[in-house]
Length: 192
Image (cartoon, rainbow, N blue to C red):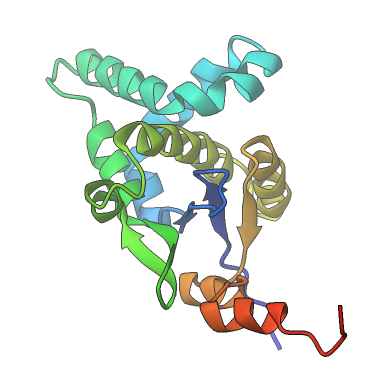
């Protein structure tokens, strides 16, 4: 039996209760290859200021650094735009689902739907997007044999976790509190 080596990232967005999280599937190899220059430049930019800066500040500003590196890349080729940085951020958003407690367990919401429903706000998403860029730079710019260790290390910097579960399996693994479960806990056969 082969263990699923497809790993996903879960980032808590709110401390809760209830905890709202972002479930992210890493970008594909093809998307990485189309964007490797700006990802490598982003990682290098963050690393150039030292390990402490990269580890502490990097997760908060990585999306901004990606946009800046995209603009620099476009300018170097006498082009307008951001060398695909905006498209890459949109792809990361597409690969992310917001998990929030709902009436029937865990709701799995696209990012825009979660913002429109006031489950998270735009600032929450910008923080998550920065963390996803930081994670993506480290994930794809590490050789395959070291990727799991890098994922775990990077996730720990983000107070996140790595899982092999799909989003549905992950939600099924979470504890949910229902009215029936709460009423069962309140009922006791032990006299008070």
